[in-house]
View 1 (cartoon, rainbow, N blue to C red):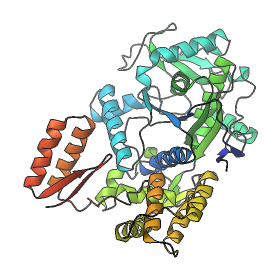
View 2 (tube, rainbow, N blue to C red; view 1 turned 45 degrees about the vertical axis):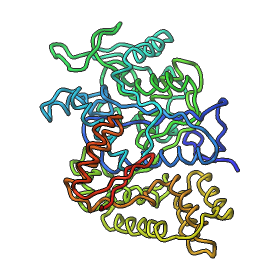
View 3 (cartoon, rainbow, N blue to C red; view 1 turned 90 degrees about the vertical axis):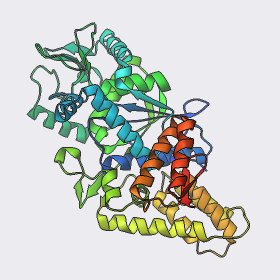
View 4 (tube, one colour; view 1 turned 135 degrees about the vertical axis):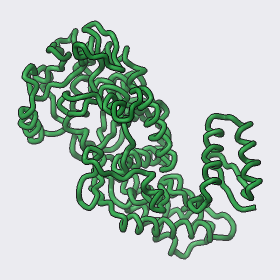
Length: 458
């Protein structure tokens, strides 16, 4: 059976046919690391993680690259305002570089708590300034670039296919909206910045020399430059949230294909918004829920991951504490089954595995796949077969079905476990062993598996 995915570019489901032998090449838009991410942001990362796990389940190896935006993302989508990193630095009295390191680490820590697999390549915009400058030079040589008083801009009128990702109707709306606050030096409302000049008399914390003057890259150029470096000038799948369709991803297509003359990406996949009480969740609106907020309310981050799985990635999902409680209860039922099923190991029922596969390979129909698992637990098959199906489901959904709960651990024990987990990731085995002894002195035994550490009372 084919893996079919809804391609935003063609507005229909299409069978996945990789462009070249070898791994499926996947690029996902990463965070702008100027603040904590809210759980709405993480809905997109969970969907992308399920995509990657499903592709591997279907027999496709994957090469995954994701960016870290640590420069260039301005506070306005219209290439105006301050760089979000500079805003974060001023807010917290730190350097922009310190802000970037802190919130990158916070993002990666949240991803671990949500069981989101790390990318094969995690690329930071500030590490790839040379590649971005080189790409702007290619565009300049092909006649797509013009200069204004504040930077270099891409002339969208030179790219006839501009906006095909969003559709003609949405493109007209975008043009109308852009005119309201349009930079008067822009030739067209949809033109966008490739390189911004440092304002006269202002010393930015993040700025670089370029052939056009001292400044910093625009937001969009980084994804094209880094994706093409690590995945090639044409690759298989690019993902992000639906808010990226009209501007960021449309601009990526224009600048990438303008520079190379080749199709940039075969499949574009976009995840829908998470709504909080039917209102889009966004940091710019002031109040937002983070992973830490979930934990402070007594939820495991994996309860939230399960909640994300209850709606198709292309459908909006409402978030309330009541819906999260329901997800917590449903996840607990699966965990209880995983813990209680006894008897010899048996292969999972072929019929159940096939139903699970068909659901996931049909544009990631995770709610249907979850239903298959819950129904299979009621079926008249040996406990060992049910356990095997749950192990398969855990590989795909990653909601901690076979992990022991640690939510009720004393704070000092959890702190030692967190330090030990970091020591293991850093391969500091001497510190890891020392912390194991400290935990034993407090009455806790730590058991290591390949991916996690488990703890229980002595």
